[in-house]
Image 1 (cartoon, rainbow, N blue to C red):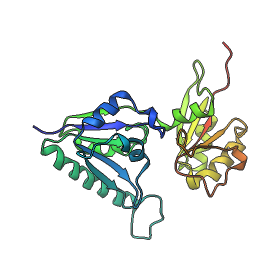
Image 2 (cartoon, rainbow, N blue to C red):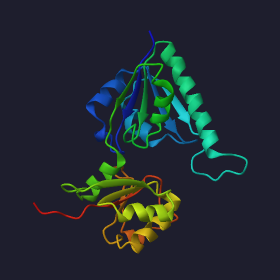
Image 3 (cartoon, rainbow, N blue to C red):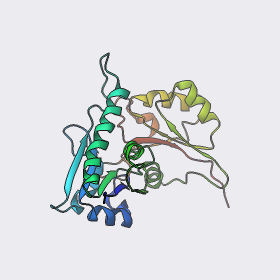
Length: 241
């Protein structure tokens, strides 16, 4: 029989935020796969490392590129797609041999999670189960101490990679917004918030729930130092019950 694929959300950073179900499946998996940048251990692996036994096979999936600029004719999309193909083949080898594989994913597997690209490639061939996790935006609003949406308000989750015009259009029509993928896009996002008069409501947090978490006033954020694990929250207008 083929093994079973498990996509496990392990939470936004605080090791205590992994779910009971994810932890149970993690401990039972003979193979644990995890995405990681070159030369690093990885945040997701750091969350679960203490729960692993020596008998469990560790399968690091090392990104060939991350956020660095590539010289032509190199193309990020082509390189990363081939990488996911290779990862899927490596995991399929274990599944075909009858070994369950747990792929851990920081936050939630289906919310900007790299696991989803493996799921797209493997779920039609093998039995797969996804265990949801606490995603970064919910960890963020928890540590910021602000309700995200009240009553009938709508929520938009936006990527900071969007163009300035698209960000402005979407922010102007949202009751509440979470903006992710900031990094080098931070200055652009802050400028749009100021143009719309939303900068006074916007809240910024880096590495929410992690040991090195930072909450910084929006006007004090260094746009050249905003890390990948940062987000902006424009909470819904407070409603008194």
